[in-house]
Image (cartoon, rainbow, N blue to C red; front, side, top):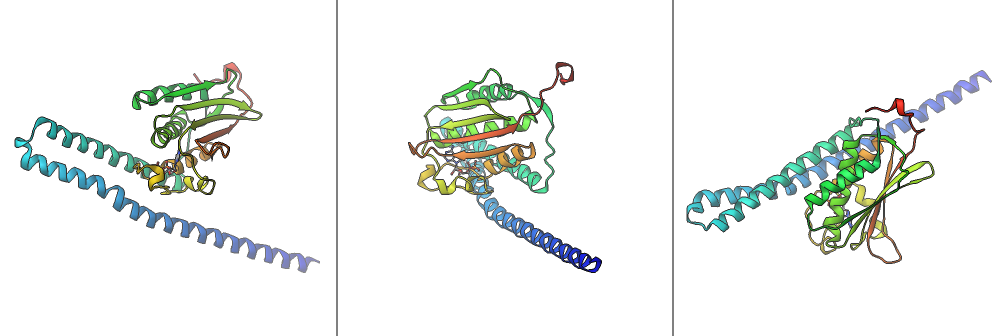
Length: 268
Ligand code: ADP
């Protein structure tokens, strides 16, 4: 009996080693895929703005004194925009690298999601002046554990996408408690995402692209980062495109509600 147990244990250890090797192999392949996607993305997302910046600077140096103030302004604005794009791309790459390396380490403070929604919406309204952003926040929202800066970044990103892909239609942000979870959702009334891509949009560098996205620029990292941050805080994020109307997309964040703190336990 003893021998048989040792034999079984040896098989179990072997299996564990195999599955560890398989996991390492999968991780290696995933990081190779990340690296090659990174290289092709870098060549596009860094080179294109850099080419515009270099071209505009050269024109300004060579012909600036003969240009109308409007043409000069156009060139300066494009330099400003492209530099902003570069800065965002680099920030996204750094966030993605932290997620890949498992070094996000979000805070686990008590967070009032209603405050995060109010602050982020206010920021978004200033940033996208033409957009219509409505909020509906349940009065009895429970507190959750999380990092308000990362939560704000995730929410801003979802609003940014809604503005980018849903044009002038209103965007609604909605929060409530659902059993053991606190929910925040961002819904737009744009073209929606087909069922087959609802999970893919969370992959690094995945962009639907083409005419469906109206040729909007982006890096394909926003939602991968959003999922990485949300999961690091113990939550989930999913996308739905209501099949009934075939219009609009809803992104839903879900966080477990811990036992609520007593007033004296609260961090100020
Ligand atoms: P990016 O916007 O930089 O391409 P994201 O990771 O934020 O990267 O989004 C990935 C893709 O998901 C987008 O390219 C777009 O095709 C699709 N997508 C994201 N948000 C929406 C939305 N609200 N409506 C329709 N499509 C969306």
